[in-house]
Structures are given as C-alpha cells and as structure tokens.
Image (tube, rainbow, N blue to C red; front, side):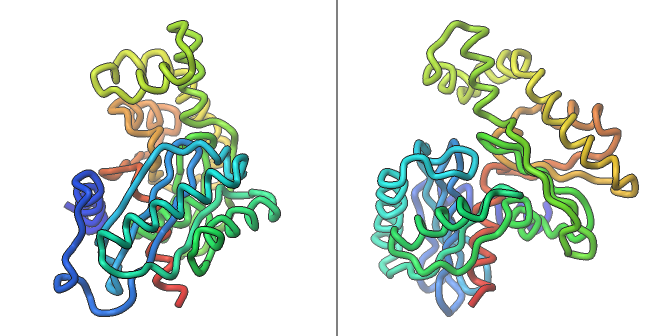
Length: 278
C-alpha cells in the first residue's frame, strides 16, 4: 500500500466511525483544517502538525454550485456547525483552515469561498486549486490530476511540482444524477439516492456511461498538448464507480490511477496546505 493510500484509509476510517486520534497520539503542534466546499458534499479534514489525519466530518452540500456560493447563510451555518462538532470531539479549538476552488474560477467567486471560511470562524490560511490539493496528497510532481466533482471536471497538468495549466469544465456527478432522473423517471433527489446506493452501482454506471465518456473527452482534449505524460490520476466522488478507470483508459490511451477513498483526497490535501501555509 502506498503512503497516500494509507493516509486516505486512516482518514476514511476516522470519518465513517466519527472517531478521533487521541491527543497523546498526535504530533505536537497546532492542528490544521481543510474545508472542501463541494457541489455534492461538504468535507472537513483535520490533520496534526505532521500532516496525519486526526478527525473528519462530512455532510451533503446544498449551498455550492460549481465553486460558486449560491446559498451563503446555509453554507456558513453548515461549516460553522461542523467546526463546532469537531472541536467538541477533539477537545480543542480549531483556528486555521484552507479551502479549494475549481481551476479557472472567477476571482470574485474565489473571494466568496474564502469569505465562507472566515464567516464560519476560521482564520483563512490559503485557497488552492482542487486538483493541486489532490496532487499534494498523491505526491504527484509530474503528471495530470483530474478532480471529478459534483459539478465540474477539473484537470491540472504538473511538471516538477509546478502547474503548467489548469482547466475546469462543467460536467460532474450532478450531470450523472440528471441523466439517471431522466432515464428512470425519478425526481432528482430520488435519482441521487439511487446513484449512491452501492447495490445499484453496475446498473447506474451503464446509464451514466455517456457522462463518463464526455468527462474523458474533456481530459483527452487537454492532454493533446502534453503527449509525454504517461499517467493520469483521478479523484473525486464521481469517479468511485468500479468501471470508471477502464473507460478513462480506453479514451486516453494512458494509465489511469485511482486512489482508495477518491472522495477524500482533495479535502485531505487542502488540510495539508493549511498546515504548510503557517
């Protein structure tokens, strides 16, 4: 198991169990928080001074659309509530947090995202691009990182740790849900619940395959200018399907690597940036 997969497994286990790493098992120093304000999910990740996950919390999102705050009061209340719950579990205040945005977002929308973090009671450490945050966890210095979120597919190309280009296109998990709703004649909420039920995963993927094909076509277009890149790393909740990786590999003609806990890669990376921004 890679180091990144081990971190992600630890974080996933903590999050699902509602557990924390005890104080005496944490690295000495301040805790840092990553706040992932996704279209589908809000995720808070807490890491210790050594960058190891110590706690996490997630809930469904309703106030963010493709990196744009569409319901300011509810988003702030949700982050504030999650912050308070984690502080109670950990027995200590949480002061500094970073957040992330899809690549290429308008500066005004980026500022609004940062304002949410501050309004929720955090000191804003920094704002990073979502695929760049994911690359930090995965240890990717050279290659492509694709963050398939609820509303968008973001692609960042890195060389020697530097971002050469970042692109974001409006195709993500929400579009899968809309396709399901139309195909199965369901309300959107019912289609979303059906999509998330593991028992329906194979049937769901067969129906949403055209959306995945479109995501792959978006990535392929970006990669045209970078023929030397051999590997593409995919993260985000919408890539969780078992058959997602083979479909991408067929379109791209390159190795596609999906880590364990793909939904948790970006929030954990954001938390690591928060710790490094001190």
